[in-house]
Amino acid sequence: MRVIIQENYEKMCHWAAWHIASRINSHTRKTPFVLGLPTGSSPVGVYKELIQMNQQGSVSFSHVVTFNMDEYVGLPHEHEQSYWHFMHQHFFDHLVDMKKENIHILNGMAEDPEKECADYEALIQSCGGIDLFLGGIGVDGHIAFNEPYTSLRSRTGLRTLTAETRLVNSRFFDNDPQKVPTHALSVGVGTVTDAREVVLLVNGHQKARALSATVEGGISQKWTCSALQMHDNAIIVCDEAACGELKVDTYKYFLDVEKAQRLP
Ligand code: GLP
Image (tube, rainbow, N blue to C red; front, side, top):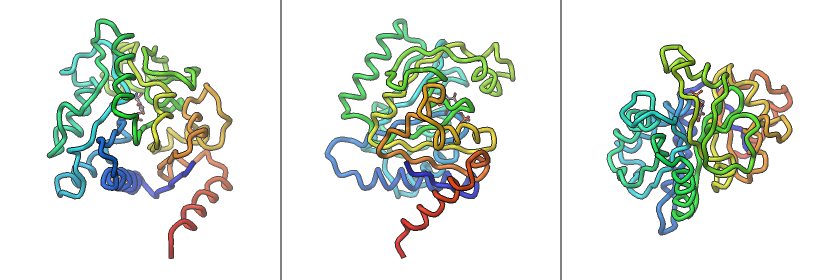
């Protein structure tokens, strides 16, 4: 696991956007580059930078296929808090060459959620698997909507949201946890860790415990983020504020390693 510690949120987003763009640009296989994407406030700065790079011509999305991580059950596309709406508002609508047919987002209104989820997994497979999965993290360490005690091998499926997640996400629903959907469709922990590379964005003091659990804790279904410790190509990109619960030794270790990797 690499841990990239940046001074602040802006620098962290810059690093992640640059990394994603360079992966897309250096993709040489004939098949499209398959990108997994999150919602939430963490990736907004990354999306802004990628949009800018795309509009300036330094990265093209014409050969990129995307799969989003999750979607609330019961919210139609046009609902302001649906992740479909979020992704179009903050990202897809601003890209100059993203093909609509290459965008995949779970349908939270599906009549048969089980089939919707099984089809989504199958579609990811038929596209050759995910090249890079970008993710955020919940304060309880959830990745996508894989709450504590979700199997670390889980696949795409229906999830029940915890009271804590509904409380945290109520900031988007008039601060009323009752208005936050109780369920979501989500890729599994196993779906994320199957990706050839995973990049996780972790910023702010409120994520400090989750970052410590991701990097220093034992592998446990209590912190689904800890599954990344088993991944060969996991990169955590974080800001200083999120490092508040890391041991000084851990913090120094990752700063030193990254410095040493830079060629003179
Ligand atoms: C939601 C999403 C996650 C996201 C998390 C953190 O619960 N389902 O995919 O990572 O929130 O959100 P934020 O980045 O706003 O802190």
